[in-house]
Structure formats: C-alpha cells, structure tokens
Length: 526
Image (tube, rainbow, N blue to C red; front, side):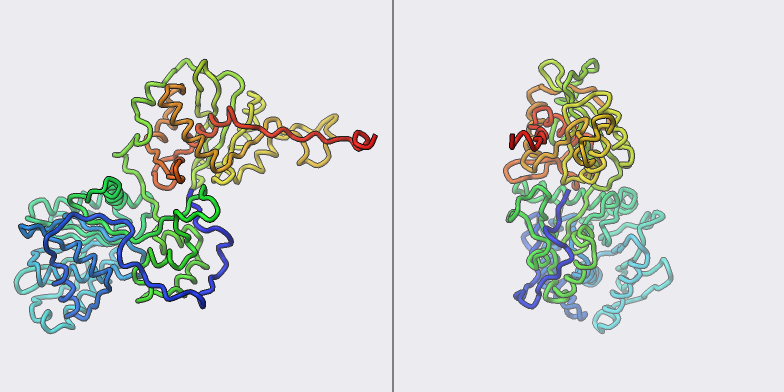
C-alpha cells in the first residue's frame, strides 16, 4: 500500500522560503517511436495564429505526437498524454484539432469525452478559437450547434464532430483521427465502438488525454501505461505508441526513514514533477491549499499523478509461472502442528483473508482458510480457529490495512478470566491464547522472497484453491531497494490470500517474544 506522506499531512508548508519552482517540461514516464520529421511546429504556429499560446511541454507533446516517418506517415498510431488536471491538456487537444482541420486535411476528426457536458465545453472552446480568427473563420462552411450534432465543417469538406462515449456513439463514422478526452474513464465498450472506425482509413491516429487512473474504469489507460513501462524497462521504444506521463514515484510503506529513492509528496519539487504548468498557470499556493483540503490519496491522484491502474487479465502469472504453481498441487496434503495463521485485508477493505501454513513432510502446506467480503467477520473467526488449532502464532502486518484489526484481535484472543485470572490485574496483562506477531518491513520482504524461493524449489504444497490462484495470477512485484514485496495498488485483483499465505509461512520460523514473568517483590529483596 502506498504511504504518501510521512508526518502530519495537515501541516502547511512554509512557502515564503520556497525558491521559484517551475513545472517539469518533460514527462517522467515516456516512450515514443523515432521519427524523421514532425508536423508539431506547424501545429504550434497555427495555434498561435488562433491566439492559443502553448507552453513548452504542450509543444513537446505535439512535436512527439505528430512525428512522421520518412514516408510521411505518423510514427505513432496512438498518442497518450497523462497529466493532472488544470495543467492545460485542453490546449493540446485544441491545437491538434486545429491542425487536423486546417493543416493535415483529415476528413473527419471525432472528439469524445466520458461526459457529454465535457464534450460540449470542448466544442465551445474550439469554436471560439476558429470564429475569432479571420483566416480560419473564412474557411468554415458551417458550425452545427444542435445538441448531439455539434460539429465544425469546412468549405473543403473536413469535419470535426463532438460525441459522448455512451450509447454506441461513434459507430458508423470513419474517423481519420479520434481524440479521446477523459481517458481515465475508458473501457472496452467505448474502444469497441470507436476503434473500428479507423480500420478503413489510411494512416489514422488516436489521441488519449486525461489524468491518473482511478481503478476499474481506467482499463484502456492501464493497457497503454503497461506498454510504456515495458518499453522503458527493455530500453526500446514502443513501435506505435507515444506515451507521456507527468507523475511522481511515490514512497511505499516499506521505505526507510529518509528514503531518497522515491518522491516526497510534500515537496514542491514533487508538485513540479507532476505539474508542468506549475509557475505558469498553476501556483504552489493553490496546490498547497489542495493538499491541506484533500485526503492524502486523493491529492496524490489528482495533483501528483499517482494512479490506480487495473489489470486486464492478459498479463497474468507474471511473478510465479502458472505451470510451476499448479505442479505443487496436492489434494491429499494437510498441515501438522505447529500451524501459523495470518490475516490480510485489501486496501479498499472490500475483502479479507485468513490463511494458514504448516509442515507437510519436507514441504510447507499453505492454505486459504477464509476469504470473504468485508472485515467484520475476521476477529470472531480468529478466536474460533485459535481454540480449535492452538496455533504457534498469528501474523499481521501492522502497517497494512489489516493492522487496524490488531487491538480487536488481541482482545479476542485473551484467555477467559476465571479462577486464578484475578491475579492477572489489568486486561492488557491477560495472556493470549496464541501470540500475535507483527513483522518488520525487512521481514516482509524476506517473507516474500522465501515464499518465491520455496515455490521454485518445490518446497510448497497446496490444494489449488481458486482465491489463491487468482491472487497469484494477478500478482505484481513492488521494488523495495534490492528486495521486493507484493504490490497492492497496481493490480485489479484481491491479493490478500497471497499476502496472508506469505506471512503465515514466514511465521513458522519467526521469533516469538515470550512475555516476561512478573517477579514477586520478596523474590528480589529476600
């Protein structure tokens, strides 16, 4: 889970002593195919004629997106600009549409947004730019303002149409260029309606523009981003995608104090990295007010570009191979004492898991005991399992979403206070039916590596349970310096069974602190 801010988040920064900070004009996440020429400069100059003065980063996006191969065709079939709101992505859209109409000769440009009102507002802005520029206005045949039919048509036949991505809008149109605004809300249905419109077009292009991913609705954006990250990892550009993302690389909860490998969300430099318009049309004072008002997670998403990007199921079993996992299935396996239980909860608290680990011959048997919606059932179930199995310990990551259950778990595991229990004093002194262990950050990384190594060595057995297999299929790594742990925020599946199994296996060899015996006063003083 991402740890966004260390220390009190509601403490205002002293902006008086902050030096002049300007937004980064180049994206942190970037890939683009090579090009020999570009129509970007012509697009920038045309926009200026219409009174639209573009920042350096906006010009960069147009130069890259309108890059051309030696034969004059587009170097990038898809162009994506992922940047926080109020930075000026609308200017890129308007410049691209002006270029398509008046420079590039594109017969039909389709502009769509998730919400119709957003599409209409974009229509009004481009109409104002065109009608207020004599050299452009005289080339216009008609401006159609009928609701649902908004369009600009030139005397030479080029058209720019505005649509909402609903009800199959866009089907039947053959667009030379598709402009997909609000791409963080763009799923398979919309792509199915719009992409086939380009099949019969020579040298088409599609532009995606929006802000950080918001989870399940961001299916298409997540696909584009994965392609970009994969290209960066292998050091080779994606052959048909130009992807530009302004964002920070946030701290994770396992980061040690003073970590310099990730960006501090309270730093003005982080705001600058994710907001190219900072110092131009966006001020630190405004972003600081946003930070004080928003939750940490929302501020990180809306202003710092920290998105939630779902998996689409096409890139499964990336960490542990499916064949390797299935080969360890043993339907007759069972655990011998001592057993260890562990609890994990999803970041959204939508599901929780209780898992167990115990020896099974020379291997360790891992098993999902319960995986259910919500968290209200966990503590009572933990008491039942403890009374039945007498486990070696329970393992809970105190820094995870499951950490909020620790106090209730310990209360539920206290021994009944009867008979000699009166001498135990306060309730906190009552012995637990089973110890509760909370691993440190380095131990969590060790636990993940140990599980991985055990699978590779064939030292794990399991019952091939669906919740655990699903978690492994969607599992991703989260780098922790030179080690790694399971990533929670970059997957679209419930990985709580996998995290709990990892912790339970680790708990079999974890050191358990024995409670100190209270020494009677006369034992010390004779």
